[in-house]
Amino acid sequence: MKPDDLRAAVEVLAGLPEPPQDEVRRLVEALLAALEAGTVRAAEPEDGTWRANAWVKRGILLAFRAGGNADAAVGPIFRFRDRCWLLPDGSPPPPGVRIVPGGTVVRRGAHLADGVVVMPPAYVNVGAWIGERSMIDSHALVGSCAQVGNDVHLSAASQIGGVLEPVGALPVIVEDGVFVGGGCGIYEGTRVRSRAVLAAGVILARSVPLFDLVRGTVLRAGIGGSLEVPEGAVVVPGARPAAGEYATRLGLHLQAPIIVKYRDGATDAASALEEALR
Image (cartoon, rainbow, N blue to C red; front, side, top):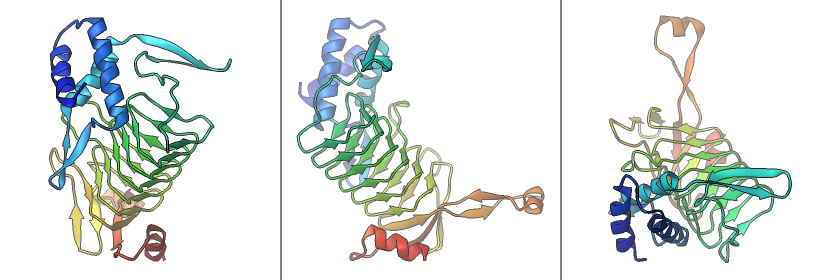
């Protein structure tokens, strides 16, 4: 089905209290196949910003609502139960994609582009989009509908949050050439713009202010908005004093991600991070 036809069908069936099971199954299969092929995305760039495709998320939610549970197993030990239409169908990964053995799961409806490498164990959820030549390292999570660009490195134990509801909300977006250090957490629709570098342990969310030491500003999400990490920013974990006499007396601090420099055109991610931390 073409994207416009998929969208029209989703809008009709998702609005029915009890949609016909056979029609829903055909639609869900077509939507998941389009997501996996990358011809449909849960969010996409548009004129320098990003737009959420709410109808795609409605279709994914329809798969949860209308599909029953099904059992699956890997050998005699590992047994699973999930919504029947979202279980991996046993198909090999696309040509050019390498998934190293050892416990990784890529759920139906996730797109892995040419040159993607996934190290074990990792989890890529439904609706996620991962661009060309990106590396998903061990114990990394790419959440539902998250958008990860080309040439991105998600280091071990990094967490890219997902979102299905509300359907109009933007997911986490990690743009081209970003380096995400080990144990980082990126949540609540945060947008990390191209070529940014996150040192190990950085946590970014809508409620967390980002302090820019280079430009002398504080970046915040604002009401209903998303936190944005500027292009080429090098971010390290930091701390700021908590407010109030009690906090001052006990020496309490809050975590505070800090931009300590910006990459120039000739600086690779490893060099930029090493210089910043030094």
